[in-house]
Image 1 (cartoon, helix red, strand yellow):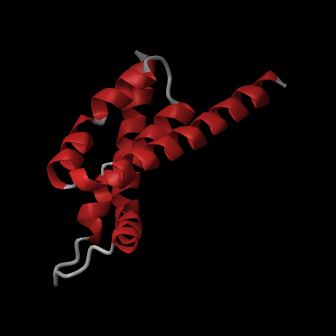
Image 2 (cartoon, helix red, strand yellow):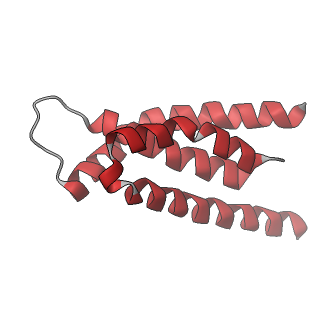
Length: 118
């Protein structure tokens, strides 16, 4: 039961971090793919699924408990559906963000395990 609450807390934290970081990743996305041409500021909308993917994979990989990859897979379904529906041409960008998040999270997980062992 303790693991469920920890994973739920990580999920809530991932959503909050994604909401806060979405304008930054939206700006990065707009600079990389030059998605201009509208008078509406879409940085937050385009950055929200990217920030959600990054924060979810990073936090669960680094600090998740048992079945953390099940949680990641289940929680990524809405972001994957959004990316496939609205930006299939650049699907490699969220995949790359997910791989970077996994690598950083795995590095922190290994560092924590090594620190606990010493």
